[in-house]
Length: 307
Image (cartoon, rainbow, N blue to C red; front, side):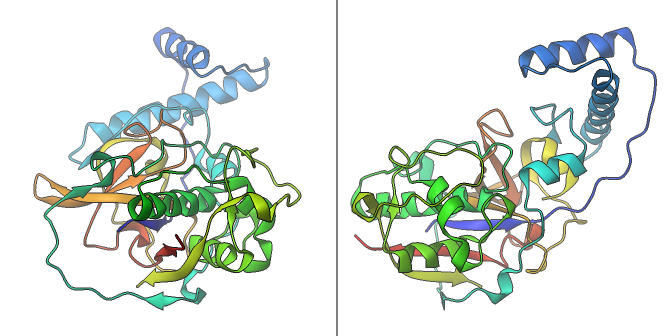
């Protein structure tokens, strides 16, 4: 079964300052070209300092004994405070108040599973852009896969409808929301449109739902029962951080579990993110399983599709 997972992140401390070497400046200019960045004369030195601070922090982490590696990516010119403002929820969401049936199940379970390899059950990684709408991508990704498993047909569903229309269910567009509450909205709204008829715009808008164009429906919602600064530069490996918050009142990011396995004795979840395919492992990450890492086990939910 596929379900969204919720993660949390504490703040990054202030970055150290230093004079860049010619090699570091060449690297930054190459990164700017690759990521299509342009800065004015006043902004350039500030972004360079932030980039080099992130780069050295990445190198210090990778030189240590950790289960995951960090790397430069499209966020490397941002402080974590800036990244949090652009890509995470403006205020943490309290998922402990969500309603729904609860699932209890006992195995046996296979040692590992990856729904990406079982057929056409998982849509490609999408990109939420500078909008705290990760909760909508977790919601659509889960419902897309649930419908595909039930019917064999993989749909691409409209995140923008959730951004624009689900406020009555305690969701807040680009400022955050919860997948369980989004599933409730789809249930009582009687449907979700496809992405082709309600395209994503990465900003809040006026609700344009058309009932006759709804293609996905929810019959029930089931609850099963967060992002750190170094997670921003995750590259590969099994993410684990003992400083990561894990209580249900601190969640600030929503993602989608698509499988699980084990690496070098460490069990992990395979998780689909919504920051594009250039981040992490082609848009995915592994996170330690069995310890409620970053609260991922505290707020998981999934829909029962109406097919």
